[in-house]
Image (cartoon, rainbow, N blue to C red; front, top):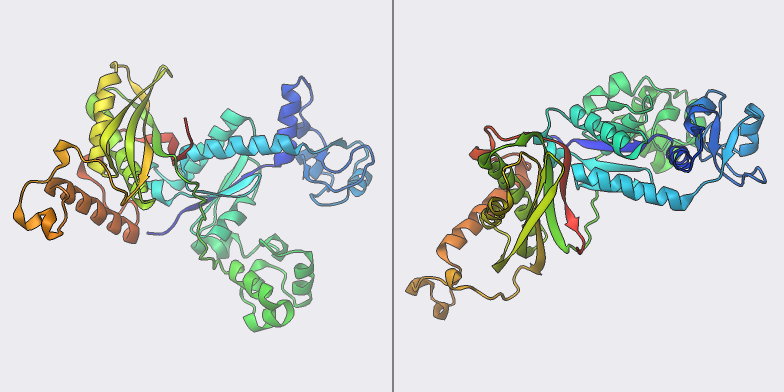
Length: 428
């Protein structure tokens, strides 16, 4: 199964975030609608342009140029100093919102990240639909816009997000590079800076397509290993993965918003089964077992309720988590249609640590599996469930998370939209 990677980039982040803050504080002028820039020391008029509005771009103002040059291009330019504390806060808000869709995120700067969409692709009609949903949700909830680039390679997703702006979704799959990427000037290629562009122009390399067709030995002679890297990017060669930083998990949870409210218990239970599989899989992947399970409900009235219980024995088994979550749901559901469902595990312990067994966990006195013989004392039914989970994990690891699906999840299950959460969570 091919990977699907999103690159999400805030449109003119510093300027957008400053504009929103000023509007919030009572300003009647939106910096995004006038020639304006963020950067440097405004009193002394020095420094460089960190961000620009679209009207400022119309005057030829570019990011990175000295402010004095920008003022020569348009003396009436509005200048604002950067507020990095504000930008850090807005960045955290963005990453938190994005993690509600998909937890597999690699943040690469304050205003951009990669998202591995592959594990949740089955939940959406298409990657393009999901990307549009993400950008629209960001605009609705946070007030600024993003571009989303979609590809099967990280570098191509990055370049796709740099296509026409703002607030747009673009694809650049490997099979599309000849049509969409190669006609562009070589200066548009990611990691191709000013000095590299000058060298390539002297070699007669003007477009990304020219670069892709140039002999690697020639590029190596003039640009060393960086030339080879540019050649690979021009040809869409990039095997790098989305690198997810895993914090030590205090709890592992997964929640999802439904495109159609669940109005009956069976529909809700099917969603809980999907969530339980995800939570259990992540527990096993992190080598953890959970002693506490909680179920969260958000009704279509936006009222939230939750209930939790402590297990007699820590578990990472799908069936145990599912059955527990369903029992909790049945206890607290009042019959109101459900908009969101979630499962959270907590009180984690490392697999292999000694645990207190309950009476129900004790094995049958079968001589061939006695403790005296040194054989396993795991109850037969529990052992079978563990073996099933391990087999499913192995299949999904090799062939992808949607390579095998429970039959009960294939029919009549409410589709998900706009919110997906599956992430390590901190203390309550």
